[in-house]
Length: 436
Image (cartoon, rainbow, N blue to C red; front, side):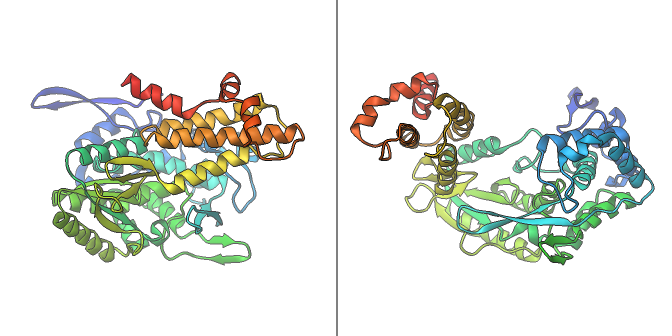
């Protein structure tokens, strides 16, 4: 179902407004009109009935089901919920309507990061994810219409590529002195009181506010340990990205009011400046705001430099911008190679056709994102992939070695893999350049 549109009278005539992310099953034309024109006192009341409406919960369930994800502390999987979805959704609706719904603890898991550290994720139960998705669909438009164009992360009809285009545009316009800021443990350190104040500035439905506060204070369960957080919003919870954007929105406003060119994707942001002095002043503004709002800049990952100079570049959304080039950052490349290794283990007994069929979607997706990188990386990766495949084929032939000798290249030349349908990164990059 498409989002509702609303007509608005302006000095230039009648304009049609379409608000990204508005679900037509939830947001009526009258509500969208209020969103466009503003509501009295800037606050929204009586939203809870939209949350527990059967249609809202059913739509929320389809989103949670599509995202799959692991089971929470109750060990109920998406598949188990699906087996009795109609009954579970009816129970959720009733418990929300009667004020009896209580969230369960969040399961804490750790996943490795490229720098040897570990990222902390919180996994709510399937039922809690559904209720969070329902609340998010109801309140997201209220906040999203206030967010600035410089914010791209986890917003309707915006994404990484849009943010990267904005960065490219700024660099080409001469804003090459860049502040690359990193917030230390952002999702786990957002102060609850200040965050709730920002939610309450737009929403006055007490029951809905209680839901959000309840999720922020959900117990966290890790093995035999259990504790109640005093700050943060679990990275992995459905509602967290919206709350994270809301908390940083005043920083966006402050930088814009002072004329700085900022590009932000969730807690990852850069400020592009025309001079070193301007960049130093911007960093000071950021540092003051961050400290005043209970956050911390990472001392080792926040830096300032002229990205035209070697060694002074910056990393943003998987790329490294330096000396006039856009390269794949080392962590992104390392993770990609690990994924290739996983799919091309020498012990894998599948046919080449099956392995190529498994590789190609991943290769096309990675290329689609990184196709603006320096071309040398694609030639290198093509060689790396073919060496992995030759080693695998050599193993299947019960021959020693790792597939790098001249005879292996003769037996399985590049054309052999092309004939097998293997997606080649460098030829795709060349074709892209010629078509521009």
